[in-house]
Length: 148
Image 1: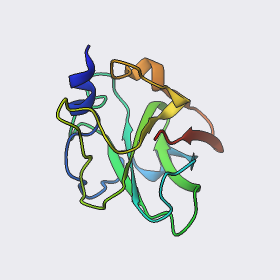
Image 2: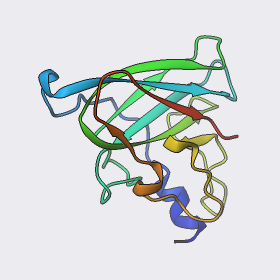
Image 3: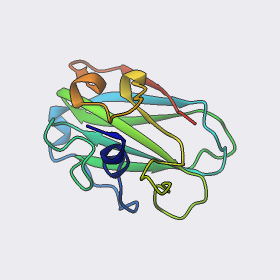
């Protein structure tokens, strides 16, 4: 995979409203996603939660998404309820608050992004297996450092 798909895969869409995971609350467990090193303390951060390989980083194929305003802080914690299993998170920060990820003429994101497991792609988008973590018991903490 080359750099161009990285850009289109990096959520290449406008920020849509968050959905709730399909599983009922009884089948979920608590997970806290901690995002640090925000580039802006005011720009929205969008977290995209994926639970399958086939849809990973494909626009609209996430299980659900959440938007967080950092409220003047360079770090935040987001508690979520996730069904048990394998998950991966992709994060973007919308520095100019235009509800999309801006890209250069090659399609490479010009706004900060990050992935669970702090995967740092160089020339290709990461795969689900690189970014996945397992939700198997309550209290899981997933720490992600935002990339500028």
